Image (tube, rainbow, N blue to C red; front, side, top):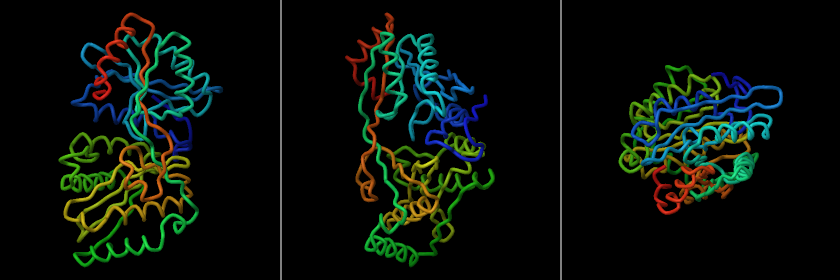
Length: 341
């Protein structure tokens, strides 16, 4: 399956990460113990008038089978279109008409996504019923041309204070990893797993690097040259031991924060603030326009000047069939279906 919709080495639009490799890595490694089945279809249009890629998976909830946009939930799921939105909408809607018995799910996704809006109109014109549920807001930092415009001298001083404090405990070092060979990436991912194993996230959250499946996922992703070039990871070491990290991915104008964590032993040293300062400074130096910190709790995001940008939604579409209407009826009664998809 080839889906080279742009440059081999650079993500030349803000959804260029969403390709065959991105979907395959997720499908091979991250769907165990979930309601996703092994069914997966990938589609590429690569002609003069239209260049697009999308993938459908299947989720099973009780007797119902949902055809769903495939891939990791963050940054978001969607259809990657480089050219020809109208042609892509026609192709996707035709495929949905032929495949979907119960329902189609396109989420988490952005409410203001142009493709989603036009696809909804097309499906409604075909008799489909579309329901959405709000999941939260996507937070974006509009990056200035100089870090001093974003972070005050007082705040920098406080970050320096914590950095000096941790260096009184041991020898602190921050290393930035980008575009390295597969063997070196493997070592970095192992370090991040060590951090998560000693962090609160291993007990109460969703680790991104801890465990065999997560390790395989990242090691498969970096087989894509473009992903390796656009993946940036900052790791803080204390006496050569990994203690904190932040992981990001660059696209044409946006840097996405994928995950961050720290071991409990350094929780009093605000390690994340130091790493964020390094990461944001680097983003500005590389002429990124936006920093996407994702959706959810707004507290620490607003500390960095993040603002609500787009509403994140789950979108469900039910075909004009007996099964589709029955699914929609039960779906509206049992709202908790939404929570387990």
